[in-house]
Amino acid sequence: MASRHEATLLAEIRAAPDDDAPRLGFADALRERGDPWGELIVAGCELARLARERTIDPQRRRTLEERCRAIRNQRWRDRALSFEVSLERGFCNWLGVTDDQVTQIEGYEFALLRELELWGCGHAGLTALADWPLLGQLERLSLRGTWRPRGYVPLELPPPDYEARPRVLKRLAERARPSSLELKEIDLHPTELAGLVQSPLRPSLRRLAIIRSSWPRESVALDWPALNALELVDLGLAGGDVRRALQHPALDSLTALDLSNNSLSDAGIRAITERDLPNLRTLRIEQTYLGRDGMTELVRSSLPRRLTALSISETHTDPTVGALCLLADAAEQLTDLAIDLRTMMADGAADIVGRLRAPLRRLRLRTGDRGLAMVHALLNNPALRDLRKLDLSNQPLGHAAVVALAGAQLASLEWLDLSNCQLDPESAHELARSQTLPHGLSLRLQGNARGPDSVTEPLLARFHDVRF
Image 1 (cartoon, rainbow, N blue to C red):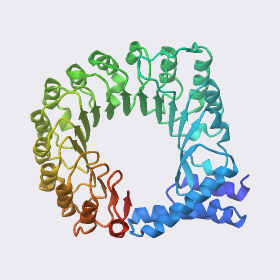
Image 2 (image 1 turned 180 degrees about the vertical axis):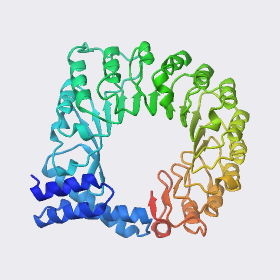
Image 3 (image 1 turned 90 degrees about the vertical axis):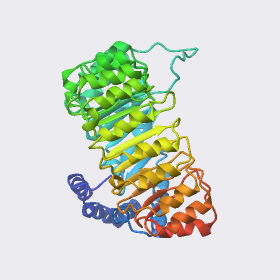
Image 4 (image 1 turned 135 degrees about the horizontal axis):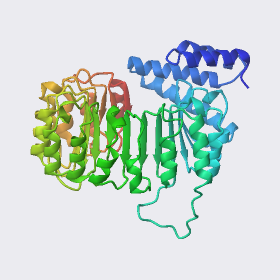
């Protein structure tokens, strides 16, 4: 139980969440009474400082991370806790729990909790969540059921309780005020979804995500609240569904739309462009059966000239390199671009990258071919010199492409992801010898041949943060 002094310090931390001083004051109070969590808070604040300053001190980072992990694990063992957690400067900021673990969430460790994911979403779990004292402070709430392949029917399916669960959801919506609500892998009844959309949490809701859920088609035409972000992912939506979902005037407020993993085809893309959402700046249409006509409609619309973030991926059909080149020419304000086309060869990707003129800060590129030509086009395009995050993971990049990257003039680069690129230890050695890549770079090399310490140690000494 926290003392009155500690409670005052917690209030100060909540009032100034970006300031380390109240946290360190609370850490001192804990250490004075012999609580090792105080040491964890101090270590967490130092880790955050090293990250902010992009200090290269791998041994110190490892020591701090291991100490935080040891204290956290011991506390979890002492309290018989098993749920997943993410810590930020000494306090839990994200939590993933099952139905029977909600009542275990108590203590100062969770005083700054902002995000919670509930797995299972049975009646007992939802009831406990609706009565949970910290519910009102959550900014992001994710309710996740049990995933089943679409069309799967279990042998013994209990009839859903369409009276009890709506009552619990109503009580939850009366107390919760998250700005972000996610409904994942849940069998939703129309009255339940409509109740949530029209509930007292409506004014606070800015992001609504419905992902891989079983729901009736008519639910897509709900009177959505005035959202900033709407994600309808992997719901079996077709073009007509998209048209009905976007018809409401309240959605003029949308700045981000994600319709990935639906069979939109050309009709769905046409529905997006014809709706002409005036404030839309982020569009994600991954795995949506893109075609030539749909991409042509997108390029001819005014949307590409307004977008700041665009994500396109496809394995089923090829929207053609020509259409994507036109899109690269038309997109003038993009700062975040992701293109994942496994049917595209490196020369096609190079053509697209070479024509980009937008002030990109984040770029993800994946093709089905070795990427030397693509990397050369990227490094030779002056418009891409200010990249901060570059993701080339999960493709057979090749040693020659890594050599080119090691000599890249990308002074602003903060993140480079080369995970699962089939790289050999010699490729890692080339990166360690780079004279141009920033020392403060965070480098991701998971899924490649790690090599001996003679390869890994120079990398750790050369860059701020390296993960194998």
